[in-house]
Length: 340
Ligand code: NAD
Ligand code: DAU
Image (cartoon, rainbow, N blue to C red; front, side):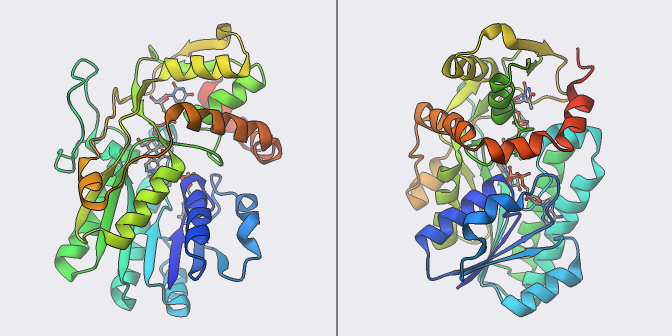
């Protein structure tokens, strides 16, 4: 089988490629990635020369490129990770989010429709449900929770979900969708909360906590997400949405304190800064459906996963030093320079 993985030079996509190639050595894996600021070819170094792997640099919005690749490779399965994924960037510049996340998904769906696939899987997010209040801990997102987006990022992801489902209903395209909670693990771009805190702490820089630091995210180790997608590809029902999350809710401030403690850094590095516009308060997934239908449960306890992740950044200094010494510096200055 040939599986086309878009966005495979990013955080979750690359972890998925490693995961898939280990468990399915008979499959051919083709990665299509534009290599935006978030894509990193050095991440894919371990598989670059593998005979069953092919990397193609290209934009999912470029319909000619996409069609030619489909004609050449005839993938049976397409997993779409490619996206603009950072909420803060969507607040300052929404347009590229609409372009990649909506129009890019549309271009892939049309190629699937034209050339035929056994499965198109859309990697979506729990952010499409909006947020939950802090004082109602009994509430969770289920697949039927109304879409109620807060940021241009989440709105663009919700639009893509609806488009994918419409292709299932209208054209009978075999579509599945997963909506996962916050991932953490190795190869995550340093703009995201956990790697940002680890790398700032390692360099004795301030740790910028938005607002009161009490916002809650439901953290899942990236490999558990990859295994959930594998199960959906193998046994998920087409036309269905599956929520993925491990009942691992943490307040942001507690994670920052844990990072400080693990790295032996003082909490005086913590700096409360202006809140994110439209900042979602709490995310919490009810993963009952994927557990009941596909037997999925998270396997990595947070305490293990976070230690492994911190160790990964300690062990892979060259990977992140190259990133933080480049255009990331301008991004950091723009986002955090005058943030009070
Ligand atoms: P990422 O930003 O680390 O990686 C995105 C990848 O997509 C990069 O390699 C980038 O080069 C590529 N890309 C961007 N635009 C492209 C385009 N037009 N054409 C081709 N490639 C393009 O993102 P991530 O955190 O790995 O997220 C992957 C997917 O998972 C996204 O769809 C995101 O919405 C979803 N998701 C992420 C999380 C999370 O916690 N990170 C949780 C749930 C869902
Ligand atoms: O829930 C899934 C989503 O998780 C994915 O769809 C997104 O692609 C992914 O980026 C992530 O979105 P969040 O906005 O939850 O993640 P982020 O890492 O940007 O922030 C996590 C929390 O930490 C959030 O409450 C904002 C806060 N934060 C973030 C940064 C970067 C800070 O307090 N300080 C920071 O510097």
